Image (cartoon, rainbow, N blue to C red; front, side, top):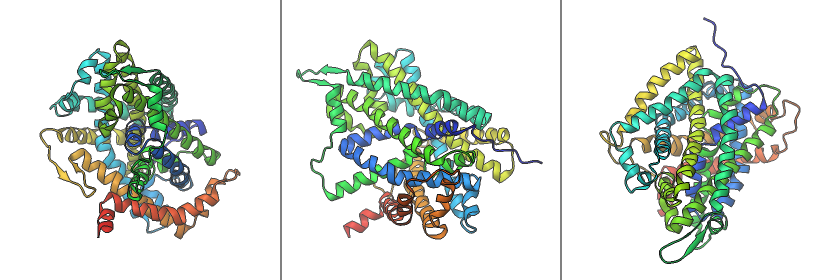
Length: 469
């Protein structure tokens, strides 16, 4: 049987929008704002920006150039690069495999809030215990997760150009416009609480952007640095095989230097705007106390903010959760596409057949993850000091353990075995100068391995034990 072509992007715009769609996900709109609120506002932002254009640039360049040069998805790319390194491809393959078990579940949560705001149930969504009551319900979370999975699978089923690229070309401009509009609206808000204190969106913007160094210690600074570093993995979709797979779809005449810069800028702008949407609004209605909700920021704090806005809150809340759903969908599509592309190469199967089989597998996985909040609920202490159940365990293994380890090993392979020129030659293969090649060489050989090793130690709890001895 003739092997089915994987397909490819029609050009640079299609690739950049699809890659940006993968990068711009729940991590930007959900995780970035709460980390900024937790880690000193502007201090976190400054550190993050420095890391994006050094560490993020290095990881993104490595993944995309590897994909295009090898013309392989992640599971075979590393063995193509250097015989004997196939284990790293297998290791990378299992990151999206684990992430996909719970991504549709989170997408289902967002879909539930879209329905709630569309029905006008703003007060119900803002009530204490609403989110917990929903995710612990026996059937509702499963239904919404499967709906979200259906849309994800349908896009992947249609292929690279007709599915992923067309979806990204429609969704990403709409997403950007919605983020800008809601960000501007957040800055116009003002509210006077029961004590007579008036807070404004502009004051919230200052809380978000002005660095807060009060009580900053060396240990605290190092923790913020590691938080910003881990956010890179979420934001740029690196070290999980996605950008390698997308890179393998890129035509040889596309300027990768320009494409990498565009993805960096697009992703970072969206992350910053997400903070401008959320932090000022939460500050206006809940003060700095409301910003301390952590991961519950968009599902617990924000519905209360939308409810406090009155009649306008229903429409703003609906627009917000539609926007989050768009971001979650493009990211979930990229995760499932990576798994699909790898399985097509491994089993020489067609796209449609592979997508259908994977859809059934992940439907079952999504059901089990949903049940992790009710019938299969348990609490397991994790090495990083947190306590988790099924979803948290999958997230911890994939993001906190595997991704730093993959980045470390990839830097050793590229920086010391193949040497940076292996990537640089691909970046310059179109005749365009790789303007940041000196920075890339230094980062991939010397800086990245050290930081990735430290991040791995921190994520697994080993660094804290070593420092306390």
